[in-house]
Image (tube, rainbow over all chains, first blue to last red; front, side, top):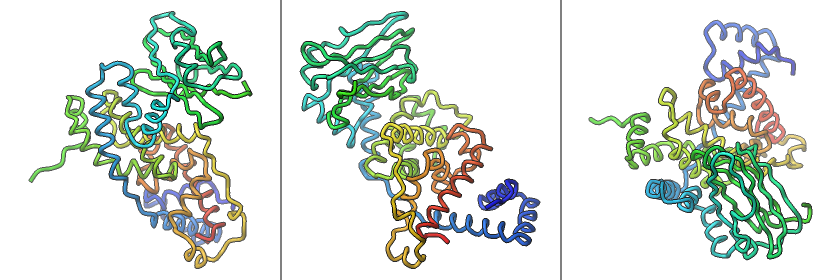
Length: 214
Length: 181
């Protein structure tokens, strides 16, 4: 198909109902004189007709109550500390169930709030090593994750330790930063997702992985 | 006669501490947002979780909402980004099934065996995220070019060309499936 881009624009404008009268006349002329344009218009119109037949689905009844529960929880715990904040990030549904289960099973290795002042940084001690070693399988290598893509100057590591595995964080931040570490044993042989919470915005920085590859 | 409060009015009330105002916004937009996310990720459970995340994010970020713009555009933007981030994280680039490569069947055959919605969703899932997003916003949410540009964060010209390419690909997929000819 080699429809001229200008004609393609006209077809799309007509289909989307935004063509001017002058454009409609030009398109009508093009359709009348060019079988290829005619066919392109017919096929695109056909696609739009098909898509129009796909109706919306009803959202599940549990959605709105779950959101409002989370909102109320958020309102009531805005200053309630980091754990309260974490609870509001995944307020209900499958994710929350999964995390709740993980916590109950001792699979969550840690929820870490790191508040650093300018130039501050640390490694290791921020996460009690025995907590990590008690809840995750031993790491078989060192995994390093650059946090820059999530807007934080620093990196996180996962490496073997005497008692299991240790998570390290090295940051340089001018204002408070919160990190969430989420362990899922079912993913890729054990994966630690790192999320950065900054000014209320949660960004997934990436993953540290418990695998032989590292 | 009472008229329903506008989105911006509800946002103001919400920022003033009225949670019920947010509940009205939620009930007003949960359907469209859920459907947009559903068309992006396909699975209802995932769409439910992600819609929930999007609304909560909107609530947390409400003070940053610029009332010069439309609330729903801002909300869609959050929702689409949540969905795309989720897809990227899970690398859900669904390969084209073998059957897509087979000769087209007649529309009658297709109709007998198909649920149109499933076929369309299958085709959507094999498109790149950015193509999928503009198709969803245009065809399932009825957004204008300008609204789509705000939501996906690209110029209107880019939206148009992206939409054209997305439609062409989707059309070819559905034609191969026998849904279109």
